[in-house]
Image 1: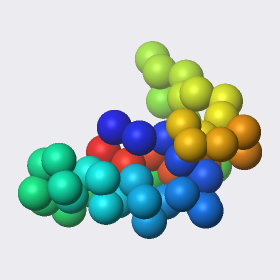
Image 2 (image 1 turned 90 degrees about the vertical axis):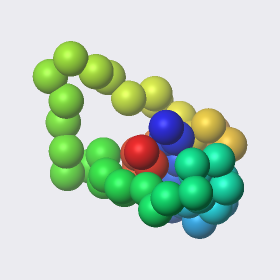
Image 3 (image 1 turned 135 degrees about the vertical axis):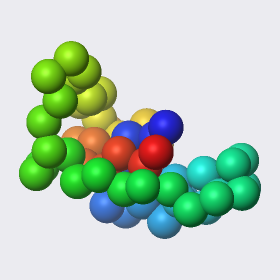
Image 4 (image 1 turned 120 degrees about the vertical axis):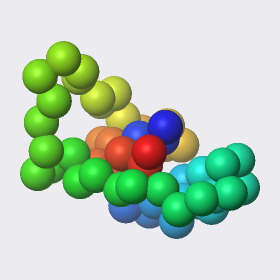
Length: 55
């Protein structure tokens, strides 16, 4: 699972495919809220806000 900004989305997809050999699901965190989980405030690669969840 990766939480990334738009700039790092492609890298996160590539990392997911390399690890799991399958296409990930991508969730836009601006349009989806979770009842029991609060996403990290920042991208895992930089200080920009995390916008996408790659799972």
